[in-house]
Image (tube, chains in turn red, yellow):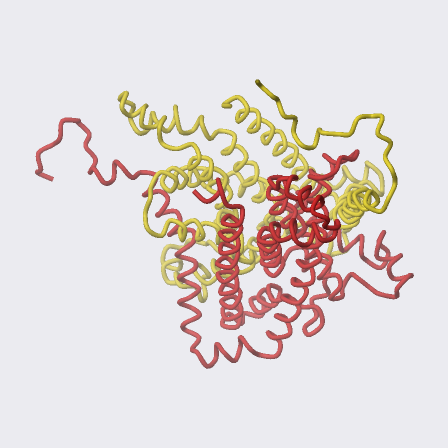
Length: 286
Length: 294
């Protein structure tokens, strides 16, 4: 470089000097995220559309989608209802042990999934604390059945709705409810017409997050399920099984389907959050 | 004319108002009970089971687990992977936060969503992506790996990479909102007073986000220690060599070594509980700082 040096002795080019964080960010994201994503899409493109479609919609793959998405839907819906209940208990009432409840909610986020899987497989197993009584009372086995998959998914997706609904519920003004009561609405009417519509965006966002997490969950489900095809095999486990059989193409295809699902769910969750912010109005919108 | 309005929750009827018992008061009482019951059944019972089962055969058996070389090797590998992944992600998180929060550019929302991607991708798919890139037999870089002799899949670099990918959004996610909220003023002031970029970062930016950064660090570490899905795909799961502690838990359980499985699980669970407690402590520090600013 024969260009005349600027006044400062050690002159890096201006664009580089200004953008050290910028450079780090893009390099890191490219290496850690874009490169693997690109590699997978490249491999998926190499499979060919006909073979791709055949593997992606084959009977085994379809049965795992039904298991994963069906059970995740059940789990996230249940957590939607109970998540609202828990958030309500945390914000609107006072009772002993409340702080403990608050702390315990986050345990599924913090607990490694393998530990969760081990604990659930034991507790809901044939000799487990809950598995044995449930089997005696209802004749239903939980571990190593689709029910077990559902239990694991409920466990790992429980915190989402609680944590998304909590701030919105806290910011609700009591006056609205009081006004509604004063105008003669019953408790049920107040809840359904005044409170619930305001909580809905947050609740749906939480349900969508929980659903997305439950569909992708592997560690805890693989330990509580028997992983038998057409019975309780979930899609992530199918990918692992394909890899173990060195059927790389099949693994790539199913993996790409899962990737497309996560991209879609990301867009949906973002849209729900934007909607929720608009709903809250006022200070959140600027 | 200064009225201090107590927070709504603290407004209670005077003590002489006798609570009358009707249906409307039964429901509010029922909600916490149902909530506790649900959380107890779904979360607390399994969590307690880990503790009880780990000590089921007595303290001696529990402690004997830690003489197992495989468990110790797994523990060591987990710590190595975490020790590499967490600092890398911390540096990236802070860089990304300063770069993204301080600039307006088209596609900012898209970039933020992309950073969130590892939260919504299945860990198994993350592992698969690494296999497709670096597998010595059919990866995209198979030729390069063969010529250099590097081994990534089924060895430590793959495990570290998988851990990094799965945990990298936490830090950025915690710091970005805070930086955006705080605005630019202090940095600009420091810069007009002649501080270099580096000084501004160390003396102004970092102190203002220290609790959020610590929070992100805790989340990253907890997740890195416990990562299972992505690591299980890339590690090859060889006992004593490429097995991390979460993989050891699953493997021991499958081999009917229940004591060892629960022993290792208890180690991981205690780390999780410590991280939860630290998280609560940091949350309180954050609150206190916010109060102090007001």
